[in-house]
Amino acid sequence: MIGNIATIGYGLATLGPSIGIGMIGAKNQEATARQPEIAGILRVNMFLSIAFAEALGLIGFGAGLVFGA
Image 1 (cartoon, rainbow, N blue to C red):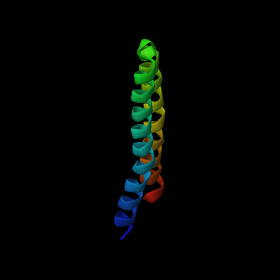
Image 2 (spheres, rainbow, N blue to C red):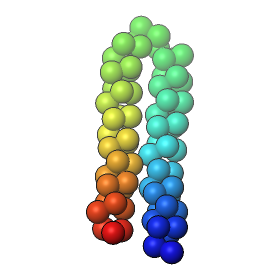
Image 3 (cartoon, helix red, strand yellow):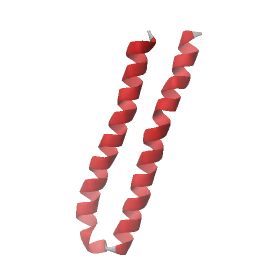
Image 4 (cartoon, helix red, strand yellow):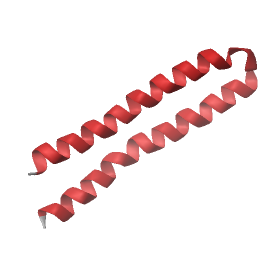
């Protein structure tokens, strides 16, 4: 029973970062369409933002493994 509950927790831990990464990508496309000359700077900022959002998902996954056992 514990494994099933932990699996649900892992899935919930990935919801926030996945929604955040989708919003980051959408806003980057919008900003690039508005000002194409700064696309390079926006791309760097997008990758940094995605890395930070993904780190939250990995922390949630790791916490589930450590504290779930």
